Image (cartoon, rainbow, N blue to C red):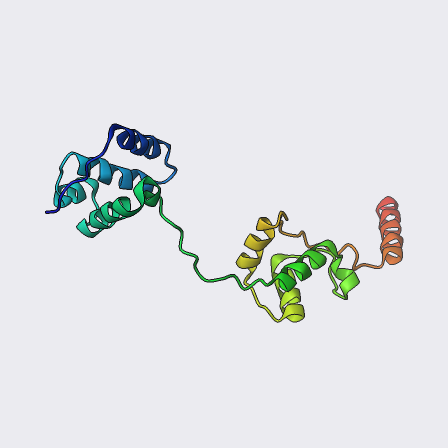
Length: 173
């Protein structure tokens, strides 16, 4: 079964404040576990009413006893470190601000895929298009899909000659 938790009025009020200002369901649930523990509900009863397992109730109660109300907020695990090194980020900023044609490419607008390929060639760090998009957003860049046109690929002099010839042909009909 397990013994309950005795709360002072100030502790109760603090948990109530945290519970209703919590931005996550997990913090809300954790506060409820402690409040329900104060009213001498059993671990099994609390778990059943909140739809969690008894191990969760035991863990939250232990956390509260050790660290108080601040321990009820989950600590995000660090996770795997990102592969984008400071050098990669510096190269990304340089490339984004450069015209790809000036870097020897046959296009004038970066796509996430093209930029990822370029950066992989320079830094030898390969990120997926999605990872690169997220990284660009984190650093304040907006990502848009480029429109592919033939403008810039055509011979403008020949284009204008053909356009005039077409206009003359239309008039002769």
